[in-house]
Image 1: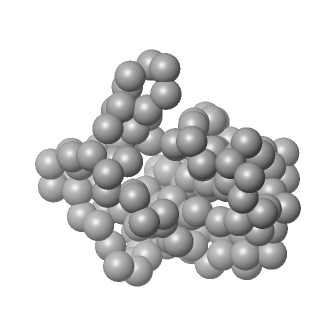
Image 2: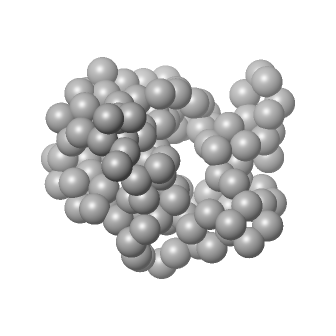
Length: 136
């Protein structure tokens, strides 16, 4: 499904590539509709098994993010992508998160943000990766 004004398919914006092992934590009910057709040989995991190429955590609160991020990060491949999504203010969903809070927590956990994305009308997302110096 195309997302936003660019009409670029969401799966492409998120960087999901053929052959990736992917894990979604707390995904919205409409995730499959949002993603559309996945690239060839993508494996959707029921739990994060090391190494995972792509992890996407959907969360509404700081406490859950602070708890789940370090746990999920343990399964992330050294060149993997870790997306964190939180409700947009305009979505009128109760949350104590915003882009600055998410960025700060990601940085505290040894990751660096490299991209922002409007997942849909409810969810915003920040893409994190390991710092280049940590990819050994």
